[in-house]
Image (cartoon, rainbow, N blue to C red; front, side, top):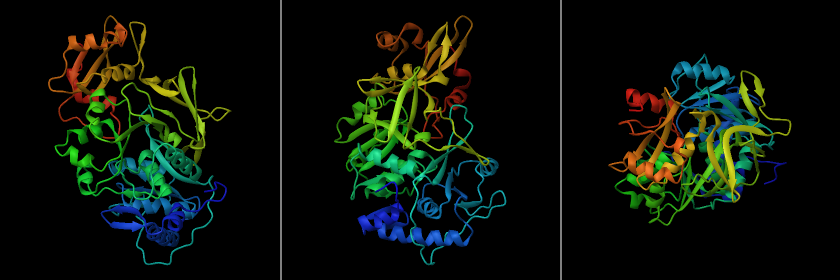
Length: 465
């Protein structure tokens, strides 16, 4: 598809893939032809309600057919789609609507917010035609918390999303007949990127009918699956894991190094396991390669550029976002050559990217720089450890000392065994002074583990004694 003369992915799919199933979920199945018509009908319906070029449309709800249709209809209308988590409290949603300059709202429970009524998505109108599209047109606003935890809205163009999909497909075999579960929410870049990837390749996007990952896999077998380490743990721990894995040919794993224990448990299955490094600001994937426990995130995908500048990863390319949007202002945090400073530390190892952790997670212990992610990656190479998070704890002598929180075998390895295990892998000052078990009942609220939330869950047990 020429980037100078674009057409809607649904319309392109209708011509290329016809009656192939594009979307499957609780609503049933939609072929690419049916999807094209539904997008055309919704474009007409939204235009009747005043949605036009340049407008920002906020959508509050879980991953669903409605969100897919809204994103594609916004593209046709020249509007900007801003999906928001339904888990946000109403007060925060109202603040975000102001930050995003949302002129229109769709809420999965038809709840009006900030004076905006929820749009009607009823069909039964004449479908609009698919107009020529520009790769430069803004099409989405996706929140990214960043290191500060304060939401920033990253604006992407249509060209960003299409370049992301095209580069990903260079390394991931995907086409008609393949089925990919939308296991990541569409208000995260990984979930939105998956929609573009499947539509571009002619594969079926399988929408979840249940909140629980395992329930969805039991209900709808798939060939492709995106997971973070926590979700992979749920799958491997399931009593019917063999049955769930039977149809899966490819796992795309994100969110950090995969533990040696989890990789070993994947060995009996004929599945291609890939790991990736990506971010909202680059429209999802940047590098991809075989899964490993060493923190290697694969090679650079087409359409992306990456350099290590003074130890920090910087990125640019066709997938790089337009900037951060806030109340009518688009800030462009790039240098004069277009590089975006990620705050991620990294290095190249045999042409593969190795992540060394966030620069803002580093702390000083007795005058030495300690990178928690480096300790975590080493711990995950132990065969009995599934997850490791290292937190700094105050000490009168050294200022701060590392304490590791572990999840894995029962019982977990003791202090002496782990000290011996790390002796050849880490300098003495980086070895944790204490190991704690994962707090009962604690589970990440998002796709990644929140260090402040884990610290709060540990409470008074997070000490050096």
